[in-house]
Length: 352
Image (cartoon, rainbow, N blue to C red; front, side, top):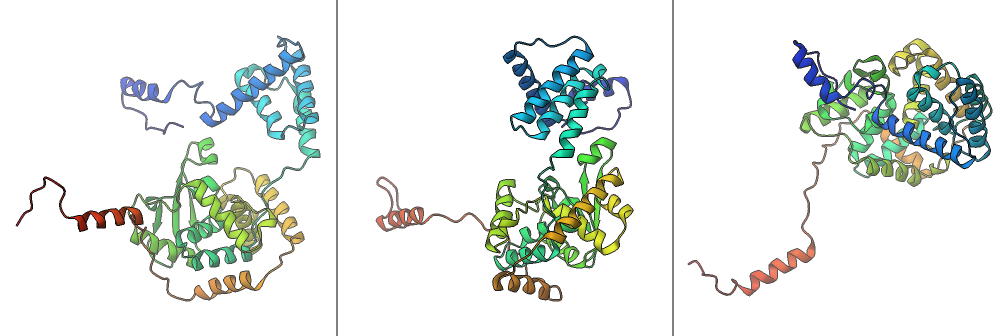
């Protein structure tokens, strides 16, 4: 998505900046969303071709055909997002059809009611502490910090993966720490940058240490696929992989934990940066229900790592190790040593 810009002082300056952004029609949805919409429409047109149906020209007939297509998606095992995408794509391409597809949207609502989405379960605080303890044991200090920031900051996975040192403001090791998130998913809808404030002292002191030792351009995490693999490997090592926790479980677990601590839905809505309390209520109700049914089986290894992290809360932080330099391979080192033993190359002049 092109970055927003401040309005120019003259018509010429505004026109030049807007040329870089594109047309208003192109900016109505995000580029990634546009790709999903285009794919959804292509699949719908392919379906019409297979059944020998042309695209209707009236809203009433279009609603009937679209309703049949949604029934087809349901019967063939397609994901629920496929139906939502094609309806949204159709209304994006033909805005006048909005509000004129009642049967199709009714079927989608019935789909939502009868098929519960496979959401990421909330991560309990106890498992977070065990994961952090394991990461510190493996000397993965920044990964441990990213877990803490994601959980207590109620961050989405993409927000965790884009944090740089320049985004963090923390004046002391006692906090609080403010993290600028820029234009997030909800921020883009409102046209305003967002931020989160973390008051947990252990998270603040670790952010303060990291901020003091790295450049402003340093990222908290490495490549996304490596970070995700670390997340999965950590759960596997602790024998919690069967519980289906995913990176988004950090945000859901942090939301549930905050509500259990403070009991305020209004505060949760603000911290979680939701536009409606209805969404926050959904997180809380479902999260509490999942945690109530969750049975955690601790082994001595995972329990010990959790206890080690809890004991470290009152201990000084170990010094963060710098990023290791690229080590020369053994084969290259042997080749250079052999060359030194041979003496100078033929034709070279020895300097006395």
